[in-house]
Image (tube, rainbow, N blue to C red; front, side):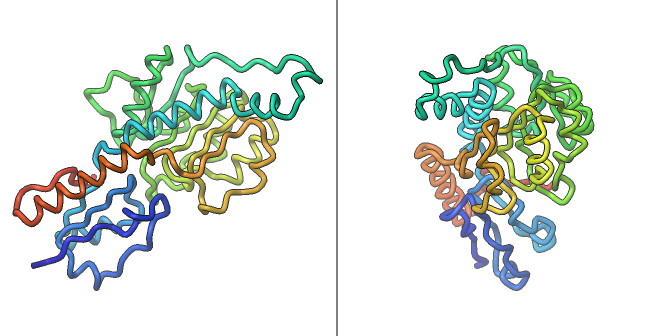
Length: 276
């Protein structure tokens, strides 16, 4: 019988493992890939070899969405920055701390309106934000305005939340031009993959005051984070942990077990990934 494969990143994410060789894929029938994102999987080769890929489904969606909203609140309301101000004793020396800004009323552009992006939209709607999005294609059932390219989305947004998949087409999708379109008061939140954002350009925009702030859970060369970001008060950093809570881990482990049982019982797999 062909073998199933539980991706090695299931026990060591968020850092993705190398892609397996074609000779290794020859022995597989399906691939369980519990971590969110499929940039470590050669989907085309899996299709060629008839290998079914099963992902995490909705196991991580809510927790990542909560982290995205938390990063946005932190940046906009200057929570971490104010915490450092108080802990350093500057409140008694310098007086009141500068204002943060209101979340409600912000125009939020979501790059990638999949499971996670939809959960982000749902939560920010409750804050009184207006939502627009960019995806590979327009979603007929979605009521939010659609922009066919990220530049136009950024032009019409106060905040960009990036949660799309990393592919050759989306590498550095948040480019210099997109950041410029987002503007001086704009905020960038990235809970997708680090390479979706041109980090070198982002640092320049942040230091020159050409973008308002950023909340980053992911980086291009993890776990090596550009040290230049450490000096900036308008950046909130997180070590790629948006997906990880005890509850989400339990959910994904149960999903893996259910898929293994289905595989060995010749039943349909759950959360199958379909290449678009």
